[in-house]
Image (cartoon, rainbow, N blue to C red; front, side):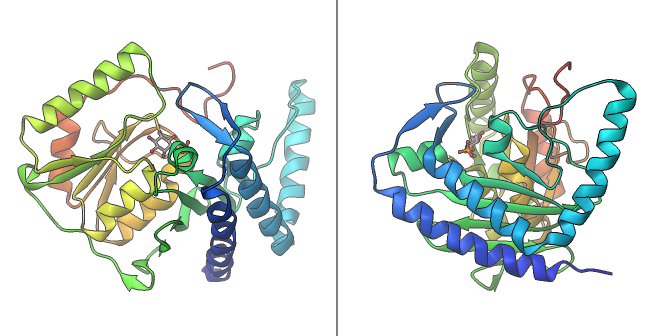
Amino acid sequence: MDDWSHCLTFGLSMAKQASQLVLAAFEQQKEVKCKSSAADLVTQSDMKVENLLKSAIANKYPDHRFCLIIFYLIILLSLWMSHESKSTFDPRFIGEESVGTGEDVELTDHPTWLIDPIDGTVNFVHRFPFVAISIAFCVNKQTEFGIVYSCVDDKVYHAQRGRGAFMNGQQLHVSGQQDVSKCVVVTEIGAERDDLALSTMTSNIFRLLKLPVHGLRALGTAAVDMCQVATGGADVYYHIGMHCWDIAASAIIVQEAGGIVIDTDGSEFDMMSRRVIAASSSVVANHIARVIRVFPCRRDDAKPSE
Ligand code: IPD
């Protein structure tokens, strides 16, 4: 049985290499484009880092390519049988910027790398010093490991299923806090800016502050935000509207640090639902689930017709 440690080691070395690219561009002037909203940004560096990671992984793991060919044949056959056409499909990678240019999000049983080349692109554009490379690796739709490389402060968070969570080699443990009124809560407003999303998110903040909680924080990168729960520096993180590539890696990091990751409605965590609560204890996670309200978000893996 493959424990995927060789992929983790390779992922860690690639994240470090990609981090050099991010840091080299950090102080430079960037050409910025908007994607889904005026707050959803992309730069040349996002594309460069994603391409670097994808091509390095594809070169290193030709056996994943073998799986890919068989998978392509199955897909082509089913497309032929259903008389449908699809222009792009790459089941081995779910990368933020590839999806931004039209690729589907489909998590299959194949070894799949979920990549956010720069989590915190708004921070990157403004030189606000929290940006991360987030890499998760899933097999049979189960996350085997996650890596979050926080570039500016040179902190690498990682976890492998069943083997604990670490930051720069030091084992991580959640705070274990059970009392929501003693929690530091981390959240983000994110890129969804329609009236319903904004009013829901701001009223959630109001509701939490009235509980009360000790404090509310936002670093501008979902991946690093969530890792703060794994370190015990924060007690709970919630977010509505982020994407699977933002939180897939940090979810396993929180779980391996002893934390709880659930959907905002209290059900099982589903990385495609675009809703998450990551907490130091199930008591706190469920308390937050009861307090916050949600707004509708299109699932990451929704088909174009949905
Ligand atoms: C964003 C960041 C941000 C979160 C957004 C994400 P990106 O990711 O994680 O903190 O609020 O929802 O989309 O676009 O910088 O990779």
